[in-house]
Length: 432
Image (tube, rainbow, N blue to C red; front, side, top):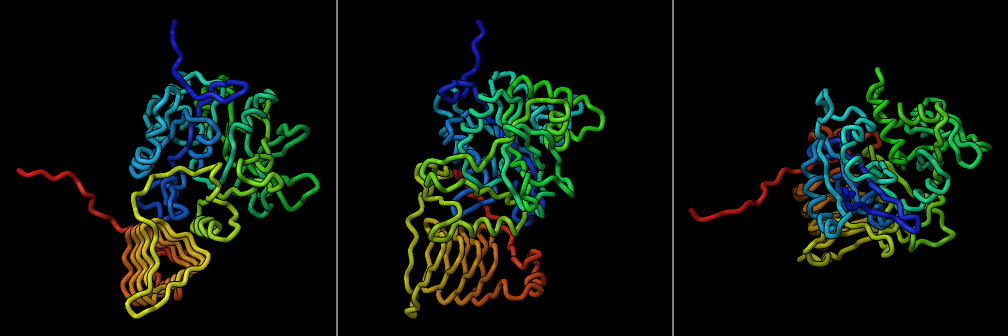
């Protein structure tokens, strides 16, 4: 008798679950942060990578059989998965494995769309034989108990369940928009339509797809095979698969993200935080959402931890400088190993092993790991990528034209971005 590979389950219904995370996009709107890495591996929140959020949501939901589909600039992401998540492969059915584009289709091409990425890896679905396949994006910031969505999918007998949340109508053209009827059954799906339908009784909001789907296995395999043979298809879930499912009368269910409950959060507080950090502005604002006394997303929730690479750095340290200048820190996140000497930091997110020297002022900025801010610098509304050293007395973020003249990126809203500095990696040395 043939044995099925071990795979994760969720109870009490005991369904076999496979997670497939789409993490291969270029992230071109996040340039220069994505010049040397994929969007899911961009640092976030002073201590994490963007992909840590979706992976932690899966793990905290009890789903630990996950393939991460990578493609563009994937080396940084692959290394991060190995360092931060390799320990999950300790029991049968527990694995988080990066899967680069295999080019297994006859044309031997890169992934051409989100559906094609899954289609090119259908062998993984066949090998594991799950009951349900969760197809999620790897580049959003949120908390979600995915098992609650899966239970609703099973209880209602859906072919696909789409996670959705209300968004302002002026933002809806960036998303797939759902028309949901009685019982949350979907009667229309409109991908990035210029004039999408609004919520019943609420002309100011639309019901947007979060790009997170739960499929019944046989349905998914049938749809992807048909789509692969369809002339003119873009092989994308939002553009092709989902609209056709609705049009053909498939059982398509909308799952209300705001109904999802997270351990450690008050029962009367709706779970509404979800951010697509696909632009410099969105990335910047989502980072700063974390710093307040009552943050919009609380990373201190011990019942829903976000896993990442462990750090052997010592605690952060704040000391006056040699001239007696005092340290002033307000509404900030500071990573381990960081040292602030006689400087002022306000409304900012500071990563690991950062150095901020005397009389410097950092305001509303994001400093990634290893950044050094020289004495007397003034930094405002700036994102500084890893290992950048700012010389003493430098002013950044006060004059957009001057910042552009120095070769830095300045966003539409005036956020200055300094790219990552290449570092020589240590390697083994031997005496010859």
